Each structure stands twice: as C-alpha cells, then as structure tokens.
Length: 229
Image (cartoon, rainbow, N blue to C red; front, side, top):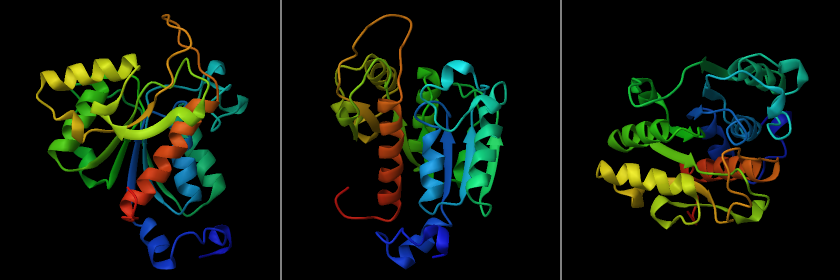
C-alpha cells in the first residue's frame, strides 16, 4: 500500500491488491450513484465505467456531494471523472452519456465485475437486472431513497423482502411479468415509509448517501468473499 492507502489496513494486503483489478460500472450518478465511485476509489478500486445522461443542476447540490457550483451544466460523468482524478491519478475511468432503457444494447457490461444500478427509471432498472442475471454478472440496484430522512433504515436485501417502497413495488411487478426470480435480485432498500407522497420527490443528503456507502461496502465485501454476506 502506498501512502494514500496506508490507513486501509482493515483489508489484507493480498486482498487490497485484488481490488485494483476489479472493473466497476456505476449507472446513474445522482444522490446515490455519485458517492459510489468516490468511496470505492478511496478504498482501492481503480477501474470504472460511469454512466449518466444528465448534467449537473443547481438542485443537485444539496445532496450530491461529488459536485459543486463549478460543475453546473457539465455532464455528471465528466465532472465526477475530474473529481476522481484529482483524488488519485492512477485511475482508469471511462464514461458514457446515455439513457438506459429496454432497447439499450448492454453488451458493454460483459467485461465488468460488478454493475451498480442507481437510476430512477423502472424500465432501465428492469433492463439492467435482466441482462446481468442472464449473463451471471454481479448487480445491485438502489431503490427509492427520496422522501426519507433516516439513514439507519437503509439495508441491503433481496427484492422479494422489500416493503413500503413504491419503486420496489413497481419493479417487483415488472420483473415478475417477465418471470424473473426476484429473490435473486439484490437491492439497497430503505424500510422507512416515505414522509410525503406526491409527484415532487424531496431528497436530502442523509439517505441517498447512506445507500451509496452501503452499496460500496457490500460490493467490496462480496468481491473479496468476506464472511457474513
């Protein structure tokens, strides 16, 4: 380990070295997804594909800690890539400014060790999950984190174990229609009931970032096959 990683001694040196070779794809760089590559890069991962079609908006800055006012109107992919390379220069980062939907060709995911889905679109999530399950690609999806304030209610579970989440309910329904075994779908999920229910979804920094950090920890532990997961 170099000086940057000198405090990362919770992980054995041989395991830490493995992290540098894993390839991670993060789809959706908003409240949840923007913190995932940051936390993984700080933890020893070096190879990323970042996907998002959106540009940084002023309304993002209350919770998406990867961005600042200097990033306004830039693609989130480019802004986050620059942030990561300022953090450490030895990263390999590819980017795509595309929207994932049912018609998207997802063959580019075949070379990745873990796919992290942080988008809001049901059809996009459905496409990613089905493709990854069919190709035996590790995948985890973040569910609804808006309209919530309690980060302690976020957990990693299976889609069939989720409750009180409208996004989870819709995703369960759509996947069941296509005969997908939802007990095999790993998700980050908040058991907190939404504080408000309306078309405008409110979101603050606490819950989305808790989901992103939990996903990052889970991915690291899964790839290193640490006991307890």
